[in-house]
Image 1 (cartoon, rainbow, N blue to C red):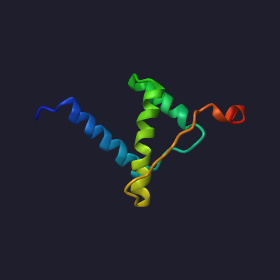
Image 2: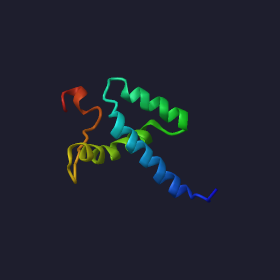
Image 3: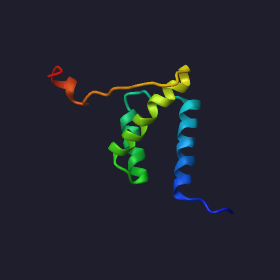
Length: 86
């Protein structure tokens, strides 16, 4: 078997995640964050890292799904709307 670098493993893992989301869709249910938390725990990562990873993929996944070359997404502070946007 050929030697594979960690960088190449990361590229392959990213391609697998992208393909899975393209085939099966994004989990847009109320329990999506909990599911990401479970995955984060299982792989030994912080939920924030896993969310950042997914959020960085979203523009590309949306662009691929709708045929756009570039998609921009702006995220608000998670807690901004809980106090009426203040």
